[in-house]
Length: 331
Image (cartoon, rainbow, N blue to C red):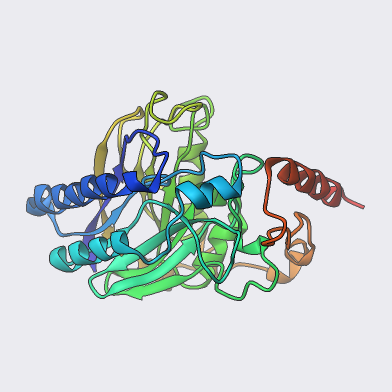
């Protein structure tokens, strides 16, 4: 139950069409090999994590363009390739995100990452908190009658793994939900841009990763987009991919700045489980007074807005944000 995790950041040009995805998969499979082989003298790399937007980003302003030009079903031929690599190397891959189209939800696009192991696809996670107003892909929360798990967790031979994407991590409730479902390794697939990156004075990336680890007594493995401004305008992407232990201790971090980088860190599930069992102090999961938090039952940001007949728009997101701000105001 002790192994190495590799957070692998990428620096690809911004894809404009799904036909560009295979070349990116080629490179990420090569990076998986590089991590597994290059660090073999130091331990077994069993978990490899890639950033948000590694396959495609929601670069278009309308859902129709996303579906027409970038969206793919999940699973697909690319996830099949990750499965073959995971089986070959005996490891788990948390993929970069896809723009996903699902015939069960016509007219919607999702931002989706997959956990894939030697036995195949274990879960797909759809971003619950899109970076509004700009992202017009749907949250599962937006869809009337959505009945699939919002925050799936996989029980594997390297521990219980759960993932959330980028902006989700600014909502402690989202990551807490993974922990309360048993997640021991919290995986962040992210495209976190400047100035909220990995350096002071606004190093939200580092602060949030460390805070989510310590408050949930869990490891965090976080892969951030390392694309230069020229590759992913209008933002620059600071990288700084990292791993954090269950006390918020930085185990490893890539130097901030764009570019391909691989950073590895030890994950000790047995130690984590022993710590969760032994502790009486600073066991935030066991100290939760859930009845004192009625806000979780109070609707604020409006759901049910993503329908096939009325796709999400930037203007619509702004109206929903305004409504959420009105609901937020205390009585």
